[in-house]
Structures are given as C-alpha cells and as structure tokens.
Length: 292
Image 1: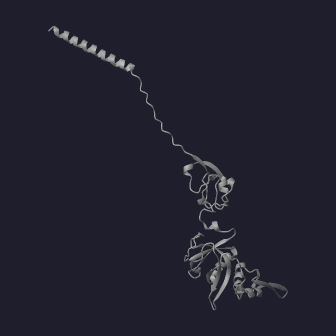
Image 2: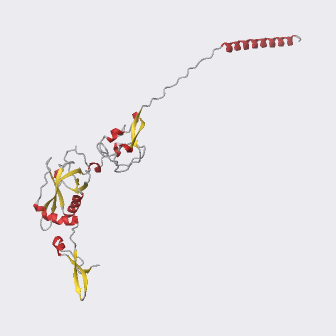
C-alpha cells in the first residue's frame, strides 16, 4: 500500500520531465527557424494611349459656321475616338466650310454627323446653293422622262394647261435637280420611276412654280450635259403676262380718285382704274366707294 504513492509520484515526474524536453525542442526549433520571404506579384496596370479630340469651346447652334475660336482640343483615349471626330482644330477648319446642323454643347466632340459639307449629315439644306430654294413637283413615268433624270441633272419645266384650248408653256429653264423622291446621291445613275422631283430655284421662281402647279400639270425635259443656253420663247408671253402680275403684286392702283363737285363743296370718290382693268381683266370691286 505504501508503494502506490511512490509510483504515482514517479509517473508525474517522468511526464513533467518529458514535457520540459518537448517544449525545449519546440522553442529551439522556433528560435532557429528562418522567416520565409513571400514575393508579392504586382500586375502591370493597363497602358492607355491618349490622343486629342476637337470639342466645342462654347454651345453651337443650327446654322453656325465652324471657326477656330469656337473649338478646343482635349485629351481622349486614342483607341476610343468616335467616328467622324477631328483630332486637331486645323483639320476641322481646313475641311471646307461647314455649318452646324444639330446643337452641340460646350465640351461635346465635334462630329461629322452634326455638320454640313462633304461626308457630313445627308440633309437637303447641305446641297442648296446660297440664296436658293428647294421646291418639289409631282411627276410620273412620262413627265419625269421615264426615270432617267438623276440628281445633279439640269431640266426645263413645262406647264401643260387645259381649258378651252390646250397649251404647253416653258416656264423655267436650266433648273438643277436636287433629289429624285428621297434620293440625293449624284453617283446613283440608275433609272428610277419617281413620284416627285425636288429642284433648286430662286425665291421668285419658287413662287412661280407654286402658282403653276395650281394652274395645270408640270412636265420635265432633260437638258444635255453642259447645255446652259437659255432661250426666250415668244409663245410664252401670254403665260408670263398672266403670272407676273400675281407674283409681283401689280403696282397699278386698283382704284383712282375723282373729284365730284356738288354745289360748292367738292367730294372725292373712288372708282375703278381703267388701267388696272386693262392689265388684270374685269374684276369686281367696290365701285363708287367714298374715299376714307
């Protein structure tokens, strides 16, 4: 019985010594251990190459002519330049006269799709000559020369009137064709039957065409390339006499004033002007209306 405590004490001493030995080995290993150096891998940042792009230095509105003072250059990723953009101001202003067709705000890129001129937006106003007007007239396969008229051609316009007698009057000559229906590409020379032709005329001729369309049927005659001869057709004098007073608002007074003496007091009255009737035909008006 007395030997049992001695055994227990011996076992405890043994385990204690063993624990100290193991701990000493572990501490020695940790002390002698060298730190492991971990190399950090850094990925290269993407390299973005920059170019310049032309932007509006101030808001630009419809009809503004592009000038150097309206523009500025700013950095822009070279691989992401928008189609139709300019990379420098010199290129933008030396590319021919261009007008703004769509509003452009400050610092917004200057793009061909918002400008007139070559390769710009396909608008009819781009191809109109200064001071000219575009007028559309109806045609068919006969009056439109069987579809052989193309944009850029020159035509004469004939007015066919019907009434007691048929007449064909040459009202405009050497007129430029702008579009056939909605096609304005001068490079497309294929024959196409059209329903409408748009021509370029002066403001005065535009009024004449509008009146002629209400008077009768219009027909086109195609001119030879390079033929710019304009002739005077005496047979059309009657038509011009009928149209011009309506267009120019004849300055001959419609009425004239006569003095009628009643007793001692002269009284002015307005009567029909014979010269006006001679030019404009018999038109009813207020005859013998007192002058106000």
